[in-house]
Image (cartoon, rainbow, N blue to C red; front, side, top):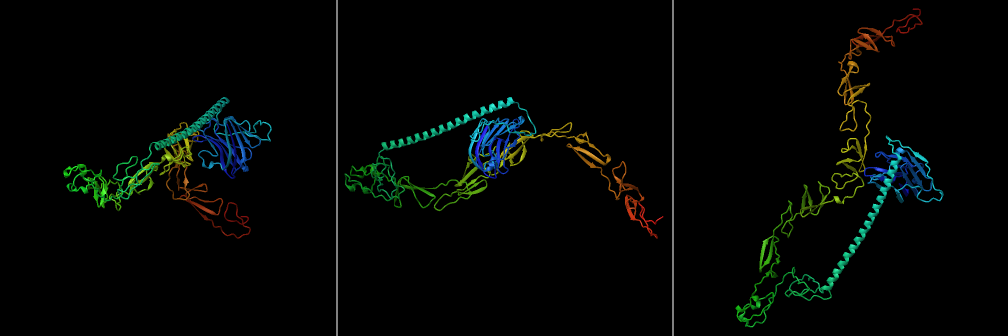
Length: 626
């Protein structure tokens, strides 16, 4: 595999240039630091999935020059080659037990300019070119005029990495894995091409469907204009009736003028005079009758909606019924209301209508309210809810809020009713493998880790409950990294396995090569102390002794406790009542009395001679010759 980048890194920065990661941890990463002038490669060796090896690029970090740098890294299981600008290639051999693991998992993620899940790894600077090759580079992927011959890539360095354990992988297995990797990368490339083709096809189909739909709409409009010479148009509200409605042309042919009492005009809607205030309608005069007018009482006051009819006889009994229709409209306060129309009144709690010429009123029925304090406005009959009570809290009308119990529910108060919408689908996708939700938050973040239905703070180390106690895990940036715990050797003959611990422990105690069982007791110093084995640890306590009332007690052989029958002074034992002098202070005379030593200064007699002297080991001086 090969990586080729052209980049310029910002000064005093440390960042990842290129990385490969799985869902749980990084696999390979190239890290450049202009702070300490280093360029290094971190990778997983074959057979060691939970351990990382690191080595540095020999020489100065090329990105420290703060100029554009061409860098190509050729990765092979047993060697690593660095190509920097037109410098000599650096070839590094890797020992067989620490070969680079190029067998990538199916969920491998390729990241340029950062390491997945690490916020502080982002590249600071400029990236001009980035290429990934499925095969190693046999030579640098650009032309250098100062290098005329093909580089032989002779190894110039050899890397040795010390691991806590090693495994031997033969050459046949390496070649098989490399071939599998190449086939897998080829399959992934073909899948990506197929997906891109499908996306292009769907985009073309979508544009074609929109164009066809728009064409059909235009065709329907053309058909309507062609078939209907005058489309229906409503007349605007009129100040009163029966004034003629205004002509409303919808095409070159205008609608004819209309009257409220006239028949329906084709292709034009009958005008509606409401909500114009009704006006008193003047009585229509009956046409000339075939009889004497005095023989038709009240003829001048009869008005028919369908038009007046002629009377065919001279007597009132001969007047047609159609001309004696009872009025079906209502006249209230000088205004005429048609049958079934609502008649406005002064009481908002009464609803009145015109029913067969009579005004019928009924009380307004108000809907049931769910709030405790409804509000009634002036001019309205029914009170309204202007507050909502939800989860023991009151919200005003029109307020939008988040549920306290379910942070993903966004709710709205309207007319006393609360409606909620689930917002989890709109959360952004976190850039980590194990994001966690904070309390009273809807969307998960990478500041904590959720693993096996438990939430851990960033940096917390824990033991995986579902994989046994030997799998030690740590939360870091929303990602959970796990590794097997290594058990130290035990030195007892019967170690015990605790279900809450990974490694076996010794419940017995080993002292000077002697093994004591759990709970056993012994006296290593005779009667003066007592020891007990508790959970593999030795706990010793001295034998309790009664208090002594002297300053220089003596411990008798075979006994643990001191007594005041004699005196131990300057590592010498003196019997009770014995007088003695101190070798270093011959002028002090001491006496042992009931375990306490008391000393007093000896008095010397005066001398009547010259040249007196004090013999060694004595207190008083002597005269010469004595």
